[in-house]
Length: 247
Length: 237
Image 1 (cartoon, rainbow over the protein chains, first blue to last red):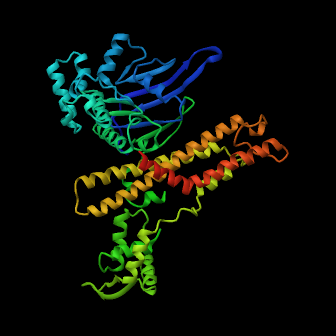
Image 2: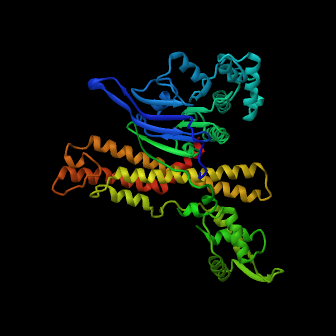
Image 3: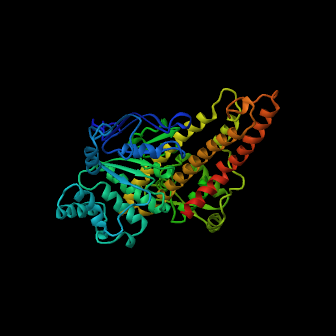
């Protein structure tokens, strides 16, 4: 896009490295990753297995620590944050979407979505209101009182996206969110993620499926722990006609 | 691409004049394969010569109108019934390029693959955005719904085709890595892009037989095999 994205990235990775083990068994999972993700942007990370995709995502979400480098979420460096601060930041700023949905089976969709807000100290009533609003906004209002086992995989995953972005959280990290879904359902999940990013969220999507990565604004290619290449978004107007096919 | 049959299909909806056919063809296929009006008239001339259309009358503005004949309808039905031939794949520049890159001096085949992958995924991103727009247009239920559906199908074909290509490229890369890992410990085979020299029998055979066989499979993969793989996958998931 030619319009500049908001100056401050929601997520900034700087010179990120992660080394597992030491000495002879040392494995460099990440080697100097730099990546900014702005509000409104969906970035897909592609690469063969073992290229560091999932490591990148777990470190970006504060679930693992880098060996060196910085992870800045909404202006705060989570690598230097204390345990308490980090936990709060994870609750307030970062949403996860996993391959296997990870909804809590004993809670309804609305309760699942409300949970992170309640954990963050919001009153149950207010949290429920926010959860219903989030579900409604994503066209999932009719699922509010269903339990996970009363929903299809695609519905559960959409609820998981609602949970990831409830309240004012606007960073969603999705690790193979379509992995357990059939092609068409996977697509509807991606379409939802896309509209959330269009509405201002920042998303990082790890996938090995090119057709799902193609929903992103930018596709980053990872090899052996380093970004080796990326696509740059086209001007929207240049692709309305047959010119695309001639490229 | 069969312009002939495309025009016959449009004429089955009633008589039309040349530039009208061009417009309708493009709104169905989203101008993915732009036609010029000259091509339309040349094709109409041939169809008329073959007795598949006939020229008769004109519209209010004086445009000469073409109509489909019974023979034209029969030909059209046969076209819809007969599968498009995939047993003699069209020449695929990418498959040829990778075949030539195997062992080409000074060429890093992995870079060739990555440059193509970036381009292919980028094209998929573009098609996917167009598809999202087409889906929105369909949901809004515009007056040209038939055209929107047709355009969506064409776009999804482009997406599946580029997906098949991206997956094939991933496969080529891992194939080459596997082959270079298991290749005999001759220096020239340590890297797939290393030039093969006739003076190193081990290396020469490795390069020629290993990746050569891979390219044979890959050629089919890029053409009929790849298309079939993408299609099967579309149905399977």
